[in-house]
Length: 139
Length: 138
Image 1 (cartoon, each protein chain N blue to C red):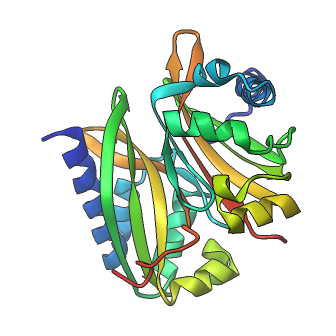
Image 2: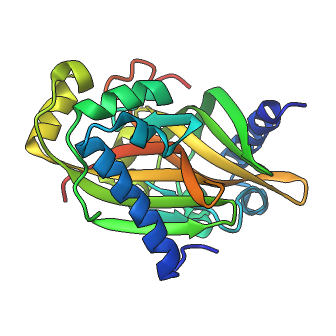
């Protein structure tokens, strides 16, 4: 299996854990050093990211157009898009974006994954919102 | 290591952005290219993904990021470093370069949040990716 295929599988695992609100699996798939800058500028840790999932409402999401490349030993970078629709707390992505998520949004996504103990775990991500997002209600 | 407090590491990464902005100011395309890994990708605040070659051309036509950064953190992961922060951006830019909506916003002044991923190359670091988005006014 190529690194790209492994990372696509890892995204599928992340999606499944989020949709199922599987807290144990969410902890397992987050690297202990995970940090990410959310759209309102706050840097969130793994515990904060997992709390947003666990305490939010039902979500629908897809990762699409993913590509990935190994950039260092046991480190892979991935690029793609993500749809997200559902209920988030206003503090999770800022009031406006969290509200927009109710109708569905499309993100452009970059993520870094690190392999430890034989498993890829997400280390960071950064999302941007395309100004025009005709696919925003898909997924 | 979550976020480093090592001033040497922070200063080393801060210095790379000073080189970056100096290359933009001097329209030094080769100098800027030396900061970017061959696989470098940039994702703009409006969600457009650009290759290394594309961004090297575009960067010469946009206003300079304001230094010092408003916020700046470094995550030191050995062979990888991740820098995060925010900066002001204001100035005239052609609508053909960024699109009319972004050009209008940048003309009025915006705050950009960024995440840059760096990998070690020899004694220095090259950027593998850089992602940016607009922060809403407070």
